[in-house]
Amino acid sequence: MRKRIHVFYSGRVQGVGFRAMAEELACQLGVVGWIKNLRDGRVELLAESEEEKLEKFLEALRTSSMKNFIRQVEIAWGDATDTYDDFTIRYS
Image 1: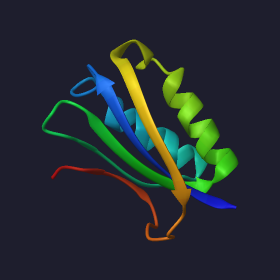
Image 2 (image 1 turned 180 degrees about the horizontal axis):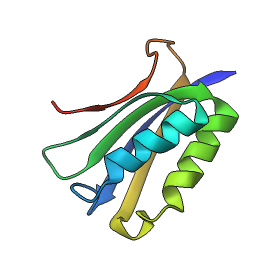
Image 3 (image 1 turned 90 degrees about the vertical axis):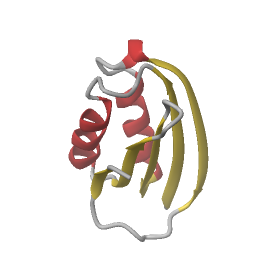
């Protein structure tokens, strides 16, 4: 079953390649959605795929070379909307 995750990462996650790494992992795993920096210093991620792929995606992010920059993760699960065709970095 396709699911959606809406995630907020806190810590020193801006400007260290976190978004680019997430985009690369998403493409490797077949995850679609987007990621962007927020003005308050957090990074927001919205992703859709099969639940198992999303679990692998979250685990890959958690154990990546960026793990020391992440201080807190807030995750909300929901049903996929099938709105996205790829995974992108947003700049607004």
